[in-house]
Image 1 (cartoon, rainbow over the protein chains, first blue to last red):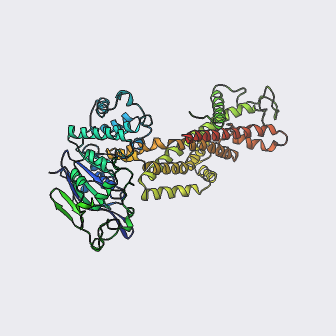
Image 2: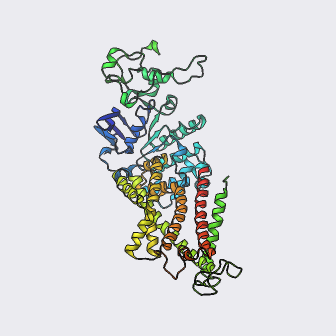
Image 3: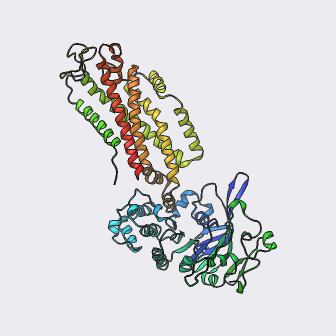
Length: 321
Length: 266
């Protein structure tokens, strides 16, 4: 039994008569200890996917799936009360902006402790909080416990959030761009910390990012999303070495490389269409350099070859990379 | 560094002086409230600070004791408004949808009704006296607090830290009162301070109409009414309670303004 199994997930926002689809035909599974990356530009459906797994989408959001199971438990059938019991205990989440993800008026230690209060009958709560704070690399934990969020730096706050998310050793941690708001050195530290917690406790991590460089650092498997469709998926190394989908290639080419000088940085032409101007056929055809008539008409199926999955009629040739 | 504005200073001084006067009046007044101590309508002098009234009672003593009513009415009516307003406002702001719709339309209906008129009706139905007047004023203060609370909830509900709390399974009630409410407390404090001023003014109005404090208990509004007949011959009698009401309302309004300024700087 897989830890997380997602079959044919479709997320949409019904608005009057028309419905806006954010994610469709999404399939993936995660085993305990996996680190899976989801890459895509803003509007590709990354965040809403993670929120729907956590059951945190707004009430008007429609989530359909053949299967959406965590540890054999059907998440679609859970009511709010049951969902609350597994949030924080079995799965938890960290957010993009550590500076605003903590209650500004509550000491940070108290906020970690709240997770214990909610889920366990632990008696030495403070001791446990101090222990996890030390574990995520916070110095002077006893002192920090009583401090308010504004007194801490962004990197420290992200560690606090990780401590909150990890204190009950959940099976799955969803990280929604956890390092985007941090500077690069702190980013590397946080990634290292997450990797360590992953090997130490076997917590699976669903890592969402728009940055291939970060994904390469932490993930083994990666999934490239565009307008809610999987465009390409597979082992990170393979995708980076031989991207087959023009979109993946575009994302990779737009990472700055120190060795390449005196050349403008590549950008994918155009912009991500909004939900109500979603193109027919292949979602990427409006921006794709290889688009043909067929791409405009039909949605390419997701084909599997070896460990990789690909949704494209005209994959990138070797000489085009 | 927090800037202490002159509004805050003056407001604080006025309110504290008044509070002091109120506390002292429980133990000591120069002449007692209901004794005839001198001739009628004595002008202010060193023996009778604010002069004497139409029955020869010491105005200053009566002003002092009257301040007890001011605080009583202010506190209780603001407390009623605050408690019910915050409860209704949090439910409306947090639950949204039909609960919000029902509660806020009810608040709109209450707001569209003149406060003093409601108090008049309430007192007419449930009986004269300061207690009923206070309750009526409290009820009329509910919509204001409910609105402030609701808009605060709607705003703070969107904050990432609320998502974070939800993502670790914190129950709704706890999110409402531990994570949201403390973050919207400052506009409520400001409104409470201003509400205090409104309540005092309204109580003076009601007592002036004879519906609040009943004689012979002293009340600023009542004194104003009694001074009416002798306004031309003994203006000092009207001046004392009038000035006190003005200063008190001014004090609480400045205090509210000052607190708001501190919060804005942040």
